[in-house]
Image (cartoon, rainbow, N blue to C red; front, side):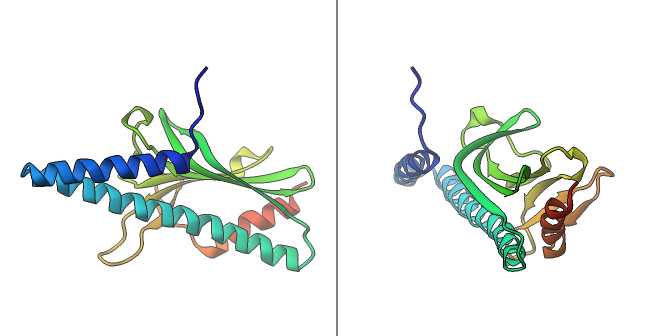
Length: 181
């Protein structure tokens, strides 16, 4: 029987192994490998912070709605795996519920080579879906921003355009959850 490993355990193990690999590469004069390992660690930190920020934005919008009487419930799942194309993203799922209606936010990135890649030059991927209303959802891509700026979540429009995910769109998803028939 296969043992399920939690993402935080996996991340801790991966971090320890990467630190060992970095030290080995550095002591053997393989600066190219050592630099790659440092870049990966820095990108993983950016990914984790950006996923947390995305979920905080939806949690804050749900909190605003609840202060106005919405009675939304929130359910968070870590170690969540979801498919984007042929790749498997590993991260977090947040579900906002209003009765039987649900708004699901999934965000993560591939953790192992076997998981695949984030297409489109992204650091991570996310999906926003409305239970029973597939057309209302959004696919998101986390991309590097200008030098020194935080990465940003872009909405992948059906036209191929990429537009920045703004607070109004987050609040719009929560509002749609509350007004769905």
